[in-house]
Length: 230
Ligand SMILES: C[S@@+](CC[C@H](N)C(=O)[O-])C[C@H]1O[C@@H](n2cnc3c(N)ncnc32)[C@H](O)[C@@H]1O
Image (cartoon, rainbow, N blue to C red):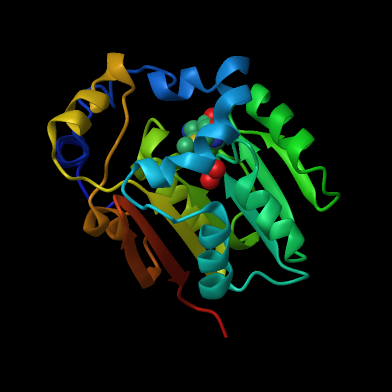
């Protein structure tokens, strides 16, 4: 059940085209291009610095994630919108089994070449409607995919279905500032991005409670835990 009415969600997310029947947002379509996939890792290594988190390298992001989520051997994680495979690689090197999902075959090709780890299963999938079995993951990582997916409420609801009781969801995203640049990038023709409010995000994960939340520059990191674990 989604606790927020659709009209209110659309207003809160700034993106006016969410219910217009478009299959993918412009941002999602741009990620299908081999050129975007080719350049993505270069951009990812610099993006947090450009977003106000100077000195916050990928190594520091990985260390923050490992410290708060403690991925471990024997666990099964889902990396949602893996792109060049950053979180999938961190997880595999921690000993976890990883399902690394992305809409874009071009991204998956680049990721598999960058992170050729036998514990990673690269999967082309729209995680908004995944058909994966319920409660099948010990943990889920979502690095910025929340900003790009067409219907973030649907994606978050799916995550709460997929994570097991006691399991965790790690989110990295750009939260809403209501500035003019975000309003522009939210327009369907200019990306159809979503910049969600952290309180709104928490409401879309039924059964999950936020245990950690911190802002680094313009970027927000949050860890949720699903209730019911031992
Ligand atoms: C901002 S990038 C993700 C970056 C990556 N998670 C990281 O931390 O480096 C967004 C990626 O999510 C993928 N994507 C967007 N919506 C998706 C969806 N609904 N299901 C699966 N992948 C999606 C895009 O193809 C793109 O590769």
